Image 1 (cartoon, rainbow, N blue to C red):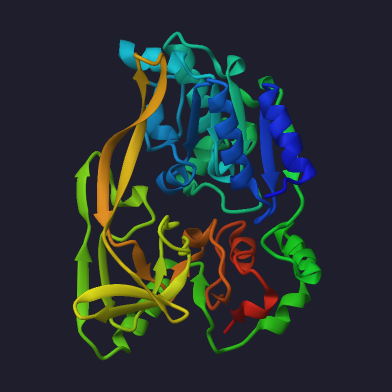
Image 2: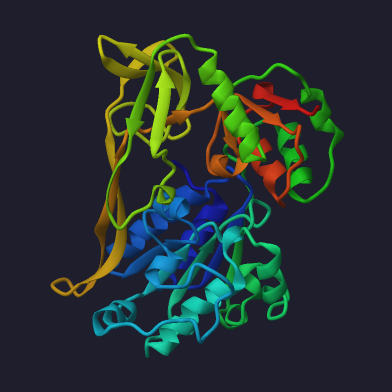
Length: 391
């Protein structure tokens, strides 16, 4: 894949040891160039740590959650006092870190970034001022989930809820690089009007997509709406129900992955594939039909039946490899489950990072979070595959 000029600038800055905030609209190739940067740094024998605010985002970048890495309290606003002291081995691990990548920074609260720094300092390690750090994300997409109580405490300490409002950020000399070449969509009018929504504006352009008949996967702001679509879709099929329970071992939760603890399906049900397969052309987000043939199960995509088997998803945490004098990811738990879920509908939050050929956005109940509408609209490859329900 040929790199854009901005992607080349990003790689050059990273290899020069600069701190960078890589941003850009949905579909501009952030994940691709970040993975490339991590590979190049590892070839330079740098100890790279990939982190994210949530379990799903951490697995997408092939790393660990911030809370797990730094043993942070998952409840309430973090302070220096709530940051923990580590045992000697964990401190040695922290001292080895050369570069930190943090993905999905739209969900990164300022106290969480400060807590990383406070934890390092509290344990006698290098502060963030002495570690290369790379932030990745689009601040116009989904923000951190903050309740009213947390917001009142947070705004008594910080000027805002974004990661750059942290105490440490201005001391990091971060270079901003924005990828501006959209690779997911090619329709210029569509892209221009998506940008209006991304910037908080309104556009009559999208009125042309209002309809009543659903197409493709349905995206909705509220979980209750999504649940009802999936219940109705499964109930409409008059065939045997199949139930697949996840097998969970070790220190892992189902919420660490984009998985279901219990998959309930019927032959003919609409489902979504949840991983990028190494054995065929199935990718995360591909929609198909669940099929049962002679007691074997398949996902049928455009007439091609791909066998379905349970896949083991592993949760990993960074540990110190004394022999190699570096860091490595060690498995701490696993979940084994068939990699599908019902896909008559998804919440907009669950759709972040995915791409679909056809999308119906159900706005019968309003979006309740900044960035939800833009995230939903930008999931579809082409406007020809978009329907908006607004009843």
